Image (cartoon, rainbow, N blue to C red; front, side, top):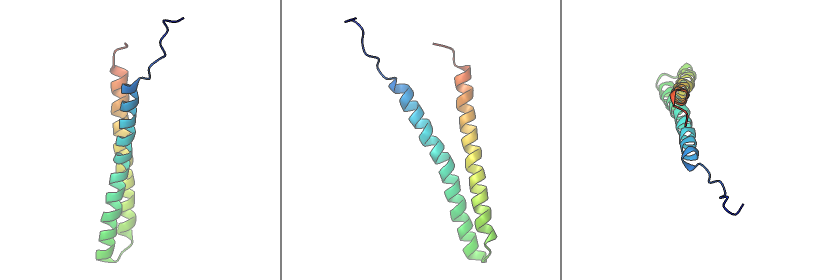
Length: 84
């Protein structure tokens, strides 16, 4: 019993998961922000509110699509990884 070591946390896995979480946040937030700013700019230029709505919709759909692609890539890599 004296030889049992406490289990060390798996820090590389924790760091990888936190990195993935940060990437997902940026992958979703940046296109939405870009769509809102671009739509707001076009709305001020033209006076039509449809550009703001279109910018938000394009930003949200681009962000979700990018997040889906990132998660799909990560899932494919973990499925193809040989067992330890």
